[in-house]
Length: 401
Ligand code: ADP
Ligand code: 3PG
Ligand code: MG
Image (tube, rainbow, N blue to C red):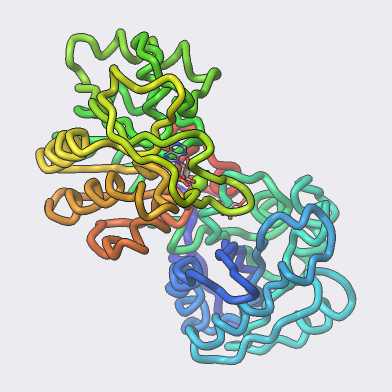
């Protein structure tokens, strides 16, 4: 990476402001998955080992500029304490006299954690005054928040104008892995995309580099419709429709190879509740339909058995795989088989494999396949934007080496 990293700085005796992405999933105040905390440990330990004191900052959820006690980072500080094996003092805000006092008294090896930076509306606005106040707490800024690097917020980007700055080891690793995929992947290189968020930008950017494009999950229906097929009540992204048609025509000659579902699992639109949590409605029908025979009153919720074989075989033939987005509504056990089949294909292969995306990573972790991947991205939106070829503001803000 051409950016300065913690390797290029001497943190001895310095108070280091470390922006991490500890936006972890919580349920009833408990941390459901602490992998984002674990992923920051190499940077935190490295700085502490070299004689720094740490002021750790993160956001949690989307409190929209209000203090929301349920989005306090206090449980995260306690978990970090266990993982890092030293005391982590939780502060009640991220700025103000009390915080300044705590930061001023730091000695090498001390660790404090600021309260959720998004309790201040200025954070998401990228406000310079807030960035300056945060910078005033420290001697050095380290950004290790890869998951939030696509946000141009006060603590993720703007603060770098006011302090000597460097990237953390997690940011360095993520950038290195994703750059390698975009610039020099081992071949054959397969990309699998699922989920519902529009990923057409990633597809367009990867087109020139991949050998095989696998499209499943909610992404697939826009393509099936672009082929002129009936998709019934399945999810459809109007905004991607024309670009999907373009990708269909560009791949007609078989370079890259485009794989779409040949069969899908369908249910009725009333068969799935999406709010407040994704749930199957007991008794709703579950059927398999060929992709050219989706009933008009049904919706596709997973890839079918033939498609699972087709996708697994394509992954088996690849030397490098990147995967983003689940192959079906993986929150529902009945509609998890497509995601499981693709995860198993990756597990069975010795290809270099990268998985990114909050939902697909959660699904693959639950299925027990996460350790089988060469790299699990800690950023959903951030990894997508990187794969779209966009510059991430949190990284762009850092000085070159
Ligand atoms: P990721 O977080 O992995 O990048 P997305 O956020 O794009 O993935 O999409 C994840 C969501 O996509 C999940 O909530 C899942 O239920 C949903 N999904 C997957 N397949 C379908 C489908 N066929 N119809 C509706 N929703 C789907
Ligand atoms: C994430 O979970 O993707 C990051 O922490 C960014 O969160 P945000 O989408 O609320 O900015
Ligand atoms: Mg998601």
